[in-house]
Image (cartoon, rainbow, N blue to C red):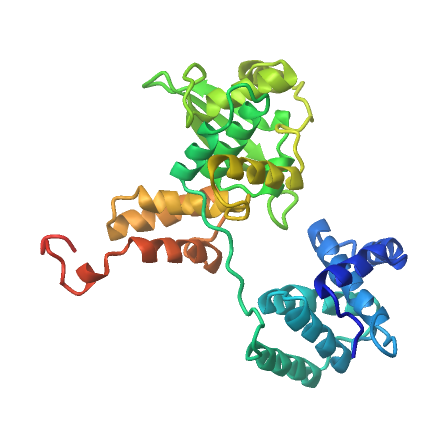
Length: 363
């Protein structure tokens, strides 16, 4: 039993944030699990403090650790039924984080019998009315959506060059917010002209990836320093650097060549700030506020590439290979295919697959 009644999700989160043990517990956990990435520490600390808030608000004040099956199941009931957390998030994120914290405190891993009981409980929860098993993610931001958002940014807006260059970079590379936030001025590796045209080519190093603080993945982008086009990444990057750091792209690159590269962030925005920037631009472009997120650029990159392929089997395979190399996926992996599945389903003409097309020449 528990006493969380009115607005349970808000109240549980509030209890988690305001309990005095939250910060001290974070330091304690940090000292015990130094080998794991920071993003996992933050996730584990969040899940741990949420669980402790539940225990302190429950009848009888059960001890949070060692983990007890009955207490865990009651906690999962509150999250799924009262607080409307997605069951997949509870099972894959919160439950796993609590197990890691349980082990970090020096307790033995859960017995197989206990794990089976918890998995059985998840199966029963899935059948309960009102429980959200799988949440629907944000829509992909394809090229036409990104250009529409860019065109609605007022010309007098001082952050126009910053947002435009950031959005185009995220679309072209499929970079997450953690990756974009990690790029510094000294990560501009190369700037050169193409031999067969006036196009400029820039190579940028991405220091961090998800779960990999030493990713150091290089991507190459094409554009024109002089062409003011909504889709010209290099032009808008150059404008952003001039407005933010009073330097041109060529000047920054020459400093990097001379070994005097700056450690200042390229866009000077945190991960959360990047999300709020795209959120504020959405309403201006006429989209619902929560229709897209920053991660929509990653899915949009793959979907745009599929839409621009020639439609043949070889063409699609080439798209999956190229986008995997650029964005850091494994070719044909579940992470990559979950973005492609819905887009392909929308684009496949069903009648042609069974020979009912009006034009027999088209497969």
